[in-house]
Length: 311
Length: 285
Image 1 (tube, rainbow over the protein chains, first blue to last red):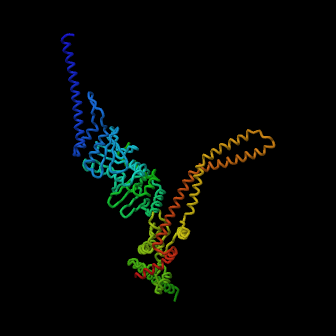
Image 2 (image 1 turned 120 degrees about the horizontal axis):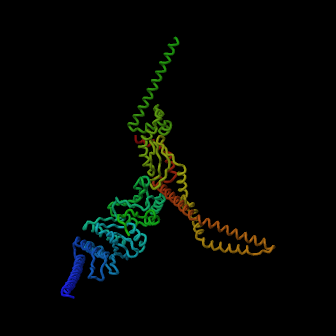
Image 3 (image 1 turned 90 degrees about the vertical axis):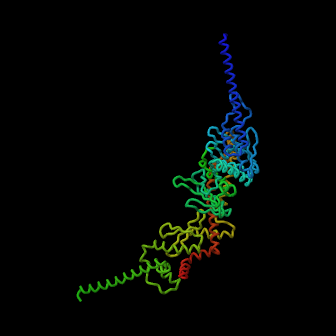
């Protein structure tokens, strides 16, 4: 090996060392950037800073070629952390979360005895974070950070709270739990400009809750007529083929076909203060819940009412 | 007087008479027109059927106007008279609803509840209900059944429900039947394989026939069990229809009681509608 070769070799070694060193520095800087984001997520009381932190964290690649970190959170966990912090900032008094560190972060809702536990399931492909219950893996809502949307899943809400879990929870616990989630959505709307689709939890009077089956056979209305009569409520006719049920002075249900060409049956809930949703009605009136469950194949909340598909 | 003169005189006489008659009719039409313009329904009813009107009011001073003049305008007249009449009926029979399905023609519906019944028609010109006798009878019968603590369709619902219990048992006993069928077939096979002695032949034959008879009876039950599913469903639908009718009849009874002391009073009131209405209009006038 001549002197020239020798020089070349040591240059190469030095280059390699430099390169490795720079990669290490990059990796450490990346890690530092990460810890700053975590600091921001944990400490900030500014909504937009909190939102920026989570937005960066769900897509953050912490590992580099040279530096691997053990025991990392997943994208889904940051969503749970975000929810925790956001609720802490705005809702602490009536609705509080507890996080439990299992294989992933588990969200518990304090102050109610529903014993429901939730987790986030993050779909990297469409940027949707699904808030699911642990027992049945039913997605209660999906949160899309990129498009700033939150969409409740009416079908799954009915399934979890009315069909599967109704007898394990009290009506007021169910109500409190969902009210907390609705409040969370409204805060996202007002503080961070999210768009919110409450589905069957929407208490507005102009919401038409479409049924799964387009056609509503009249014998199903007959059943409601008989069930209502037994409970001292009178079902009356509404617009030729439809029916109306008055549950007191301030609360009316209207069942009707909203389309003359293709049958499109559904229900509208009208109350004076626009505080009562179709879900609330089913939750509180036994005979209506029974009617809903007895005819679930027809009356089920239409999947069409979901804007985002849910897994 | 020659022939021509006679004919002329006859013609003049005829024309005079014609003019008088036309004059009467024009006057009559004017009376009708005024009555309509001024909403004097009482005058119109007096013209529609003066003898009936006279019986009620004992008014001998009936004008010589007959509404047959405007027979072709009955529908329009009925429409005109319906406003005040239906207003009156709303107070006297508050549970009836009217649908003018064609000008001057009215259907009567009982109540405003889901699937309320078409209970008859309203004859505005004669101030009369024409109830559907079948519906009226159902209502009468439901009142009578109250003393037995029954509703109109109670017995029928009970009978169908019993049938359904039987059908469900038929479905549920399917397994038992299959086991029995299997053992019966085995017995038949057994008999067939036996080499019967001549004096036993008749006995074996009758044994086999007994077994086959039971098998065919069971097959028949199997058949029914297969059809039971549809039969149960059809029965459930029938019960639903009957329960609905019970509910409707209950509402009808409740509504009658809110206005009348009993069914009889309702019927009497309905039959006296013409008299009551005319007296009401007289009092108002």
